[in-house]
Image (cartoon, rainbow, N blue to C red; front, side):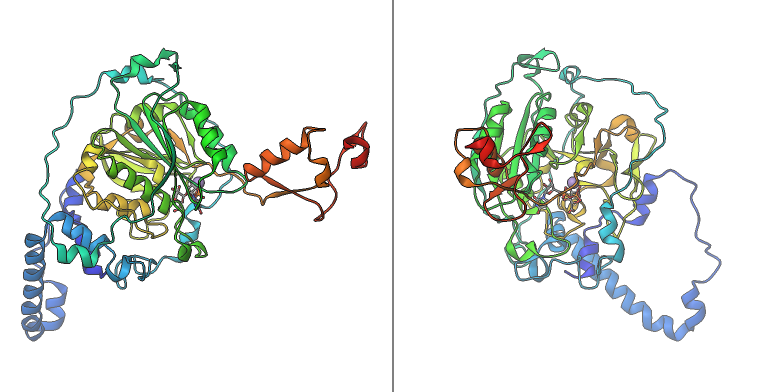
Length: 467
Ligand code: UGA
Ligand code: MN
């Protein structure tokens, strides 16, 4: 993808950006000749003018003849860049995002929590209940999509992950949420909460914690997309137990990305969830990408449910500043505060926005390419986001309703215990089997130190307790 293509994704010029922010207009000093003219003189001007004119004509021609989505497809689309064979590094060979800045790995540097005391006050404990009163719906004007098979087949790589649903449940078995019976929430649009997850020691605890947040949220369908080949019965049982409507699917990261540093984390699974949404032709509801390790304030759900097109809000604990989010003036998003820009037009975290499915349905080329660090930006570009469409949430982006918490990761536990003791004479057989199924610890007969079993403060031989 060339830089020209990439820039074609930016229908909003810097002039338009200026319009977003109300500020005094700086007039161009018409009396002074352009520096290039001053330097190069008439001969250079003669040379440059036809070239510039030609280029402008070409750009205008492309802009007028290609539809918005075709341009997006061109920019985002794979072709050599986005295809299976192509490179997934950076965004283009010569584009603004040509090479990933050296600081890219610092995007999510772990930070010590800020020590400053909280001085504000938490106000407006808005409940889901109040949301029954919806804001009047904005009229969404349908865009025409001209399909050019040649351009699309060559340049655009569709969502083509293997989508394998392990189990799903559409029945909401919860009786009460936030002190109200389920029936009182019946009119609310459904939130499709997409959680990419992957097998590691912390997976089940993370999902358990998240489930206990989601248990309080009415009208929610949880799309749990696991980054692995095989379905996992343990996970199905776990998800079923909560009574929250869910779909459990598996969609492994393509192996060629697996050993990359950085790898595109959670992309294959989010792509699978996008496919699921598309396959179900869902045009009613709200999409939110909620990673398994973040912390969600219940007010977040009330806020995103109001999304008419795309809403945005700050995410706490992001990188150097401990925050990433929109800059809002007079109720409008005008810019972004984030310590890693790297050419991203939408420098936001995955947890920092929500999308209305009716809006998204207008963009058949919705995509999230395997480009580490740029997933949010490119996804938002693929749905034709414009600054003026963004709805700031969280009291005009002054509150933090979601936190980018990270769990300390450790390798699998190893418990050395003779297999003859893993029967029903004690709890240990069943306990260790559960830990194995959860991917937390495994049992071994001959690796490492013997498992410590003690009584009255003294280590005991296994046989003394278990035989
Ligand atoms: C940050 C962002 O918050 C993520 O939304 C973004 O995907 C990620 O960076 C990225 O660009 O790599 P971070 O905390 O650094 O998140 O990443 P993780 O929490 O490790 O991973 C993000 C999500 O992908 C999690 O839900 C995780 O379970 C999942 N994941 C991670 C996978 O599905 N497969 C993996 O191999 C790793
Ligand atoms: Mn995370």
